[in-house]
Length: 316
Image 1: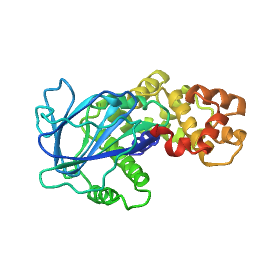
Image 2: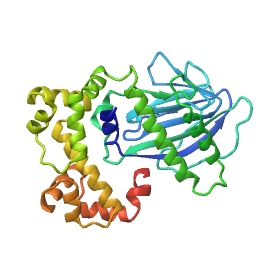
Image 3: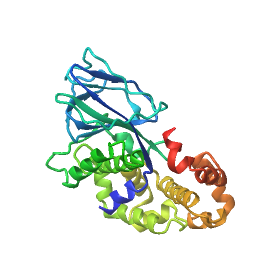
């Protein structure tokens, strides 16, 4: 569905795979809440139960399964369904030195790859507020495509310390898992009905496509509503229900993302970036970009050119 593609394309996330551990029963880990860090765990070998504090139910993950814990919520990993075992283990905080181990697990052990995601814009897109407390991907589920097994095999191979730049490759591979998990959620019965119904509406799809095809057009709610063949009020309501954005908020977000990429990855002047991102002049672009990002375009570019943004800034 083109509208889903457009919505997912607004997300810029960076992954940091920074910890792996093999544990033997009895074991348990209680991970504390950490706002802004969307933790993830991939089961490389064995099995684990995962639950949220206070929850009466746990989810069992086995080899190849993947889970994202949105919004940095506290959670519990354990070899038993009821919670932490007598033997406790710790996952280091994101600020600590990465500890990726390449050894294979022994019989009866569980081996985990752990990390976190952060969003380029600092906060997740509004529609992700509907996500469940635990977003799981089961490698052997009937709906899982065959390439998930291939992706898992590649990740396992990159766990060898001898592989050059293995952490960089692991980060990119786990970003693929992030986007697959979101796509699976949007297409599933877990997603709020409003998102799927709205994104399936051809009228809304026309408006989203227009914004993506020509973000420089001076779109208004009225012009987008006319394009969609809806009244202004109905269009604005349906758009927000489906995407989490107001129509103009979505347009601003799209323009900002175009500007981010051009500032980080090109040598275009600020004026040229402003034009390509859909702004009439550099002055209005500077004001809009600062409101959205919290920094001027030139300051953002300076940070990006120092590789802090593109490579490591989101890992700190």
